[in-house]
Image (cartoon, rainbow, N blue to C red):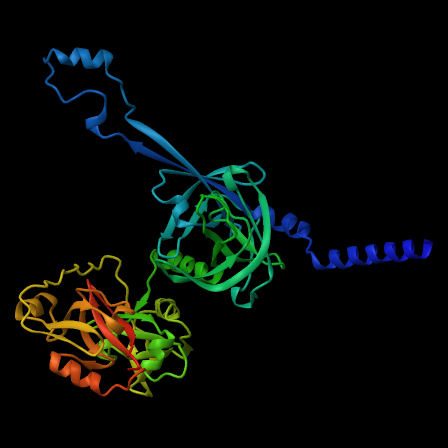
Length: 464
């Protein structure tokens, strides 16, 4: 009995020591780096419209004026809206990083340090595309964070966040890196670090630390259906943020590269239809006329495999790599075209924030000159001259009805088929002739004009 008890105690002690070795101790990190994390509070003055100041716009001598003056509820002309966020000091002379959405439209920004000192802050610059803002307070000798390398960060590695969730200053939460290079809808320029660190409203703009005590990201977004933490948090890599900071400090603005193409993901079906051995790269579904890509000879149906020597594994890689390239730089691009690779070079252009978006157009479905049902189970008609002029195209077929194999694809009534693979389509006769040459059971890719954009839609031909 005594022997069993001894073995049990030894086992418990061993398990405890093993567990202690596995779980990290964050106390030293927090003690050293916590002082460089700040609370950012903002105030926005909301001015009530003149029409809602409590009285209707009546002449001074109107008898109802006195009635409204005495009995109508009077709304204040100005109201204050306050919000909270976090930030961290990157230089001893008072430069602070936070999120752009934390200070957006703020009339007053107050930074509070952990020792309760408060400073008025001014915005040096902000970039909404990456959600990064640079603040400055008038102070010296401040504690500052050390910056790390997100490239060396590994999935599964422990990370820690410090911030002010719901206004609770200097709150510490920890977790692991869940994924790297994560793309989010409407966020094309940031390869987010995904973690399971508990991030809540008020944490925005705070730092994400690795176990060396280095900042590797800025906590920016959460995925939530309730407004609170649900296990998915996203941080801006610190190298992306510092590139923005350096541009804001030197030029006051952020410039990004562009090449003038529309792209989509290469699915397994599309890879098969274009003869690619694996689903990788960025498929070009549209090329802007006279843009950098057009001048270099890039065409719709090309697949970009490498840009400036960097492999494009997913289509989401391309916008980030292009945007990070300095406008005016001449780069090499590796393309896949008609079963072979080729190299072209282009000069990167610059994204203009005030570029007008092309207006969407509705395709008229009447006045169709002819109609035919292809072997795809697809009913199409040739565009008339008015439709071609409206869409500014020389050919294409209007989708009238979707059945058969086409019904299992993403094709929609009202789409305009511009090409099969890299073969432009001008007539129903040509459309069917091209289809006859495609073996049964094979995937084909239709270039489709939909609203203001173009995409490739894969369709597998029926075996019979």
